[in-house]
Image (cartoon, rainbow, N blue to C red; front, side, top):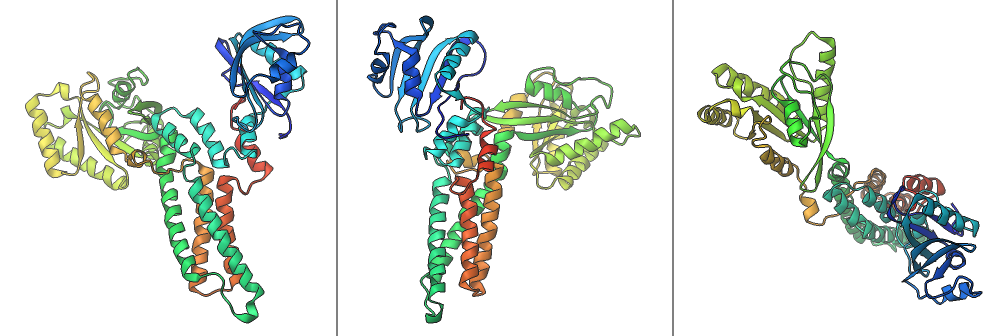
Length: 478
């Protein structure tokens, strides 16, 4: 990628459509546009087309035609941006043409013939980063915003793109570097035994920095699942209605439903968006003792999926609980699930309530809540869709997404998480060094290590390999 090149690419999705937008960015963008675009008020045979184009105002939209020699390619709207007031910080031209694939290819080909080159993945946003229009974490948020498929993922990306935690990290980094400089200055006056860096002020900064970093690090558990989807395992014994429930939540026949025990032998996954939060539902094999090798492997996978999930839905068959042994077995299974997954929210679902009387249902519910008062218990009939909407509400309430409503900064990027972990570890080294009164030289090294880790997040410290890896994940045209 070369900053001085003028690049062109389709900025809208590939394929036919009502319109397509072709973006040109770079120092030659206006020269190229002036060579192929004729405003509606000008004539194609005019000898001063470039001069006419140059008179178009900055940040304006003009109706006209794209020409290839004397041949009209299309009637278009051309938007002219003048550096540095553009997305990339370069001169930018955006051509809105009709969405014919042929027209798109022709316009891009004409731009290439006039000196542009095809943009690589993410190169427009890379130009924006190199021209200081955004820092690296904000640039990465652009890709997250494009890929967002739920309100929560969108909100996290918007927060980060608008600055999120990067401004706070930049401020912390600046203060840490100032202290490192003062401490290093002390080395030049080591014989005079003077202290330029106030250790009490440094301790205060370290405490504040640790609180900030710890909060961001802890937010990754929430941010990552909100970005990729909250995994929810549907578990229970055979024939309690797990696959039927999955189909009811998705409102489609995703899983095969059968009265034969052990029909589901492997996990089945699909996604659902509830109130702006994305959930990954995982239907698992029925939990029971079996001598069938294949079914046994499926049961082991069921426990593994439950372990990987953030929320466990444990299904019970209401028709099997109207006896004392049935209730005892049910309570034992609930206790086993709690002990097996102590750190996960457990929602117990009483299924097939349409097959028992209201009196039986009330009695079963009463017994479960009496023996297990902390149990989140939901009654429904997956087959007849009774209570399914109440379950969806419970899914949202069971998962704590309160940080989103408070506009708190949330980390959802694994690269940021790793860098924050390194910065936090270095901070602890600095604090230990102060407590043990270590040499100023080593103290300054640990402080600079913290600052370097923070700089990796915002892009103040970077390299070509890192930039190439990040921007190669973008789509062409962004």
